[in-house]
Length: 163
Image (cartoon, rainbow, N blue to C red; front, side):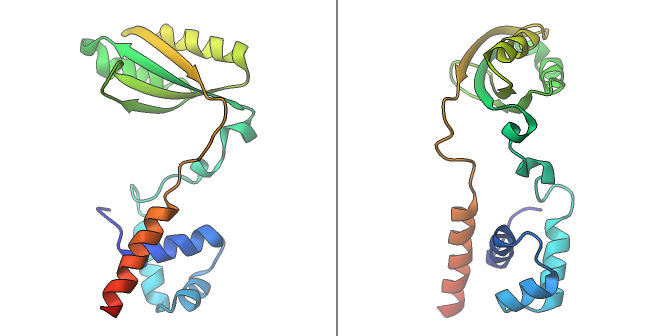
């Protein structure tokens, strides 16, 4: 999928409020045709459009209350192999290529600081890792959120309809 439109945004916001809503309930609530909602949901649920359902689960409910951000400097000639091997470490839950002091930023989870040490040792054992720097997350101030952007897009659609 390339991008969402205001109708898609309205459907996703409605699903945030009631994830179990039926197509009929969504259509009634949003004032859309049932076939429109059904087609939109089919498109949104196509591969590559929406994230996996497992992304709704927080690591703390899996027994991993500690989060750390690990900046990694890597050997550029080993980049592909290094990122593949890092992705095989279950506690590395996100891996981003960055600019700045490091080449990659890994979001890592652990059971406690001793477990974080074990995870860090696993990361350091990956061929191509030159250096790491770890920062422990003390508190999640704001979780990843897209609802404000969806609301903005939905509102733009309402304004366009009125204008």
